[in-house]
Image (cartoon, rainbow, N blue to C red; front, side, top):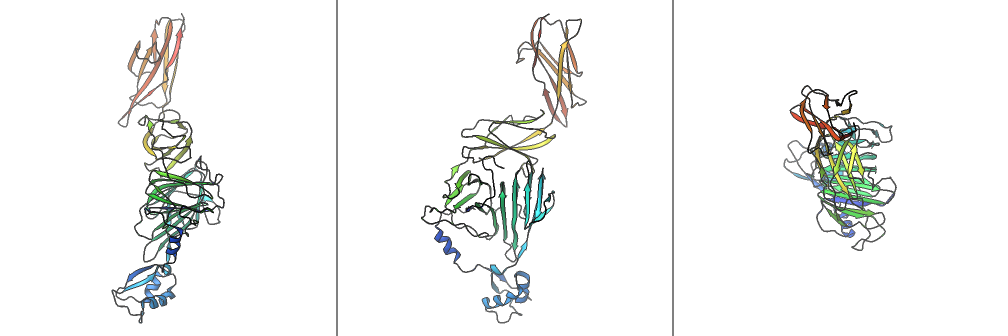
Length: 471
């Protein structure tokens, strides 16, 4: 759940969001004129042996509608059609077949249910159909893949319904509608190959109609605010408000499953907007640039995985996400923080990817930056103390991730930066060292473990420690 956009499913007017329409905004009257146009038609070119009965059985919802085809196309012999004849077929009569969505990633508490059925654990590889609900709990993640390769990613505390998953016979156009009950949806939608392809995400105040783009939509029911953030493509935003839009007409949302032909506001890539319920669509504003990660190549070998984000003008908070793949489809961590130092506990060894973004004062999340990193936890313990009955001082250490070729470097000096060491011993294979006849004073020391594993060089340094000699 977004920190700045906590979501609660409540009844609210619609904010309509259309992606991919670059034309200038039109009035609502233009949209109503479009709705009054003749019914949409598609063409079917007859083949040898075709009859109207066969065509209706293969493609129409009701095979008895062959009579409508005969009347529309002035066919007097429905059993005998000349090959190569172009028949006009109303799209509204075509059969719609069910599609499915495949679960490609599921981590943490994730459940699903069909319509009003009981919630069951969601597993990778399972298929979901129209009417299924998916719900992620705290620290739960799920990613669904549609037949065309589009992806829907659910971060923690999100619930959505697969309201429509259908493909129209004959035309092959797909119609996919997702109802977001609460939470956030991150969508990466492949570009539409057919003009009638539809992909919509609906929330209590948003309808997002997509024809190929990357974007985020979140709804804050407490504040009555909807955030739209566009990473790629373009978004047209319309608000259902008692107020009039800038064209002087009251804006109404489009009917579900129909493309949006007009936009009150155009939001281009790298921009976003906030719209309050009952108000016109908010003006687009530039999203913050992608922030930079300090020390991106650092091996994450400490107990916690930690990231340091470089300062960015305009940032009031940060979002850090971790996944097992470069696209973060298989996401396992998601955290927001007002501190640019963000850490995560209990992460197993392996190769991961981190995605960071900055959040502005409005709560809009900016452009992301992704980095690969290696998690290789190493514990290096140290101790030191005088040897009883002598003026010798003993240093000891151990490493919990030993390797046959582990070597140690021992450094001792009189300044905390150890730039001018008194002792700098390398290639130590044992876990201890003894220093004799040290004069009085304050000393600083560290030990560095060096290993070669799987063709890579690793080193782990203990914290610089100090001690005082008063003998």
